[in-house]
Image (cartoon, rainbow, N blue to C red; front, side, top):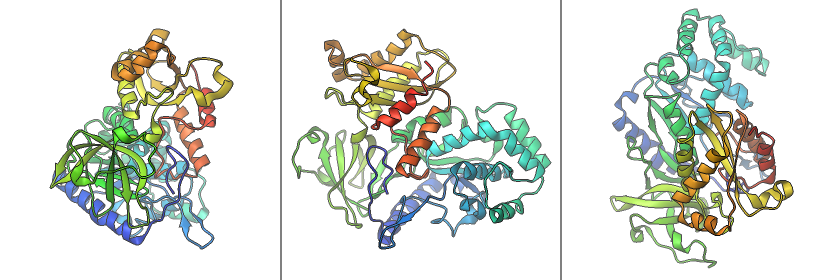
Length: 466
């Protein structure tokens, strides 16, 4: 099942052959690149991997239906690599499983790597740590597992057999937390070398927040460009700040549709092959894979930024389903995020936590009569309110980044965007609500930056504080 970030979830076939290609061309290649770039990771230190056991259902023919991503079950032969013990992976509740991930990670002062599919998962893990660190430290001190967790008796007994009272480590942890949470990762785990997670695209915001706060001084590596459809590219340049991915021609056959042709209504538009693309140009990817997808438009638009052994190297730009477009202006997620960061930097004391947008058209009568506009929901730290002038600064910054948007604003065809602050934790609640609706696993969920469901918009309207 696809994650449903920018549209309805779709069922796609996954085969042993495509999974093998992902491992051979993706995992193995990236592990080698990681070892070369960060030789200190080539050690016997354990990894804390934040991933969860998804719920699968079966088709009428008995074929399992669920997310196509790394899960505890797919890693069952490697439990010795991780700080989390095997019984914890039997816990279905994400909240309880996350507590156990944190509990066993905190017990081990020698953790070398923090890993997850996406940077957002690691960010939410640190947010949970910020809320529950006292409870976790008490469990470590007493050698217990919190009674607040809903666990099967057999799972609880096996977990409790693995924890012994450790007052020395508890005292160390209390000293770490007493200094606040900025740079907490390195204080908790002095030999932490790497955060291994995708931090490009919609996860860029979480990667930046982790580097600026919880994980100051720790290297990041965004290894893959992948989707439910399979492996698309690998990052051979772990230490470069711009996330670039070498396309994997044996994993998928890629065709390229020039960005200038995206709005044409042809059923079979003329595409380019790898040898035809030009550096500096944007293209939508069209893929054919061994699982039965034929000329499948995954909706991703990438920029060719170079070549490696004649194979294109790309940077992810945006998903077509995640564009703001009330008058044909087509503001991409990347463009809006650049404008938002510029505006936030001009709001004294403000720190961006999360955001999303909605086009006024999907909100119906709840906003009254007005010109088409963007509704922007923002969660901030450090400020409780914004003046009207500060809110308008975001509109100004977007006009500076997008000449098309600016022209529509000058003509009055698009009204000023409405910026609303939501309560702390609102996006965490939205995430849970959206996962429940779409039956998406925490392993694959990506926060949409453009909301497409009226129910999600009204959820955030109910969380608005300013």
